[in-house]
Image 1 (cartoon, one colour):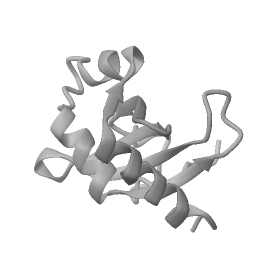
Image 2 (cartoon, helix red, strand yellow):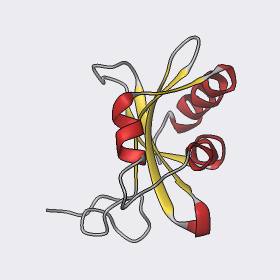
Image 3 (cartoon, helix red, strand yellow):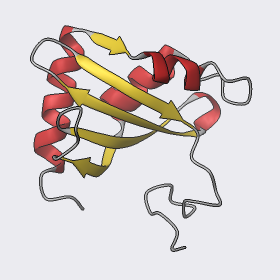
Length: 110
């Protein structure tokens, strides 16, 4: 478990309660025909998911990778960055089973 997972999760939720901004890359990824991830599903990940990776040194500002469940229980990953006035959703995607263990939290060794 990430040491600061609870702290970043708190910041994510507080920022999301103010406003959620979907960056263009996130919109493109969500609308890919093989994904079709709804904003409702992304919100579910943000408010009910868990932080699985923390990126405190990200060039876009402190961000994290979250795992949650979408429609039909499908796993969804969301990368987001809490800002003072909003939550930036950087990307959202369905994790690839060739890159992730079946817990969807652990990257496979290359």
